[in-house]
Length: 103
Image 1 (cartoon, helix red, strand yellow):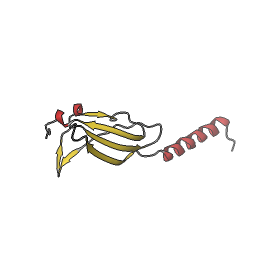
Image 2 (tube, helix red, strand yellow):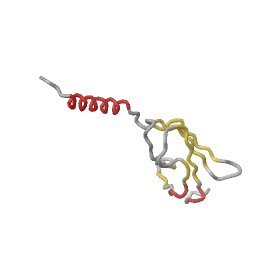
Image 3 (tube, one colour):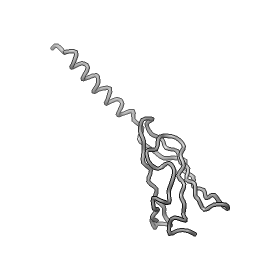
Image 4 (cartoon, rainbow, N blue to C red):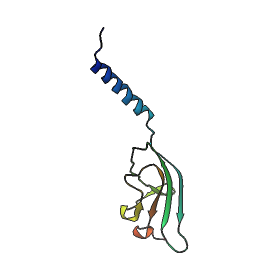
């Protein structure tokens, strides 16, 4: 059976794409620390490390809890590395004065 150059190239590209998909890193967040800038400020720094493929970007979603009760965090109370985030050490700043949880 003869194989043409075009079929060999197509097969090679298919194998290359399959190999690259298996090497992709699933985005993960680690090393999360949450610290209030006390006593001079109410702002809360949320530091984290995002691990993903170097070509990927991720959107970060936050959920806050009071024991088992989920708390709403308005998007205008959050700033920093939230959308289109590349891998590495990142920071989000939460301003509780822009929420109903001011104390």
